[in-house]
Length: 193
Image 1 (cartoon, rainbow, N blue to C red):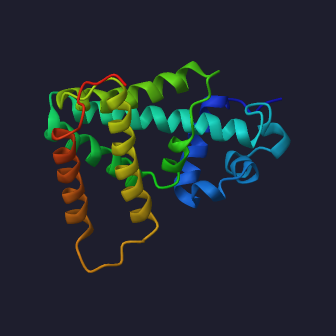
Image 2 (image 1 turned 180 degrees about the vertical axis):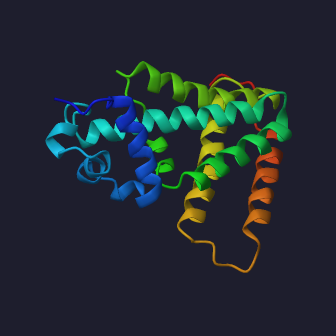
């Protein structure tokens, strides 16, 4: 019999908290069962296994990140929106170092909530790019550039891989400014390739 009050949503939320405490790659079903006070076999009544947990955790973190990005973009355009969204993205990753890596998983096409959360996050970036006149296939390229730059920065920062003697925040600000310049001069803006 499942523990009273325990359901898949609680299991996933507790997994997110645990991931932030121990790290995403150290999150195990055994550790989660222990935290929840259930035997490991009992946990399978709420989650099908490690891959299912990773997928559900990805859906949760993607939805959280999309919400923060959407809120940051509200009422802003172009570089103001770009800076606000990138800063919100970085802030989320800093506050949730264990769950953030889960957001990098490709959405499960059989999970409509996960797909919707991913589309919402990408939609925020597409809206910023439309402000620069970048649409169609060019917007896909621009969104990939945004993600590669911001995620790359966040991942390197989290790993402690910025060792040069320059303030990291200043480098982040310069990167966002450079992205804005690149988007303003984007070749073939509006082209549908």
